[in-house]
Each structure stands twice: as C-alpha cells, then as structure tokens.
Amino acid sequence: MFGTPPSFGTGGDGSEPAGDPGMGGRATGPATMGVPGSIRIPAPRDVTRVSSPQSSSAPIGDLFMRLAKRIRIRAGRELAPLGLTPAQAHAMKVLAHAGKPLRMADLAARLEIVPRSATTVVDDLAARGLVRRSASAVDRRATLVEPTEEGRAEVRRIRAIRQGAGAAVFDRLGEADRAELLRLLRLLDRELAEQESVDRDGAGHPCARGSAR
Picture 1 (spheres, one colour):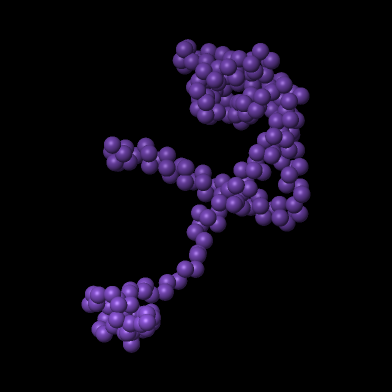
Picture 2: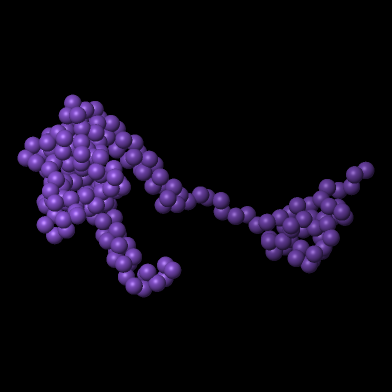
C-alpha cells in the first residue's frame, strides 16, 4: 500500500548515496548528477575532540589565580596590624628595591597607577615616617621619594609576612613538588620577561611605529 521504503545505502563505490524515496528503488548513476529525489548522506567524519592548548591551559590559569588570591588575602590580614594597605606595602617594596630615590612619576609608573594616586600613597607613608621626599638636583620641579631607615625595616617585616603567607600554602606540598613548581614558575617568568622585552623593543622601533599607523 505504501510501497517499498526508500534505501539509504551507498552506491557501488561506497561513497555516493543511492536511495530514491520517490521511486522506492535504487537511484541509477552517481548522486552528484542531481537525480531528483536522491538523498545525499555526508561521509562519516572523525569527531574526536582534541583539546587545544588554550582549553588545556585554562584550568591552570584559574587555579593559579585562585591560589594567588588566597595568598593575598592571608598576607593582607597579617599586614593589617602594621597599619598598611596593600597599595602602601607595594609602594614600600618598590621604593626599597629601586636602590635610588624615585621621581613621583616613575613611582606611579612602576605601581601602574596615576600620579595623583601615587601622591596620596606617598603622603600617607611620609606621615608615618616611612619615606622622605626631596627636590631633584637636576629638575627642581621634580620630587624624589626614598624609604627612611624605619621604612626599610618595615619592608623587611612586609617581606617576612608575605613569605609566611606563601609558605602557608606551598608547604602543603612535598619538597620535590615544591622544587618542581619553583622551576616551572621561574621558567615561565623568564620567558614572559623576555617576550615583554621583545615587545617593548618592537614597539619602539621606527618600522613598528610606522606599521601601527
């Protein structure tokens, strides 16, 4: 009553569809000839998913950011008795490691904040006797900032607190695991620093500036 069901098999070469639902039989000739009513069935494809570098690295980045946040929170709690905000502690570290007085503009650049915010940070630190300001001998309009002796002692306390916050997390690993993690982090840090240096040099090259226009 309803006729023979259409065939959904393949042709003799194993690649072309051969069913004809209108005729109830097998289509003659290849399907690429445009036979009316023929059904084109795509060849099977390999659907195996291969993780891209981005997808396989995503969990590492997420976990790293989560651990870094936990360390910052722990360090922030322990810095609270010193009366320092994270921004002030960071500024003290930058000033101590500079090895020379810094211009306010340079300090702001290293802290990655606007000069006005850097001025607020320095004002608070100076009020506590942790930094001192002086006029530049080269440019009297520029203000130089450097840590006082009390400020350097405070930096040592800050360093000890931060190291303790990190140890509270990483001491949960065995010695061999910590050594391997340290090796990998140093490797990444070195490669990223080299890439940033290349990017800076490229941005300053005349050809690079011309191509960016």
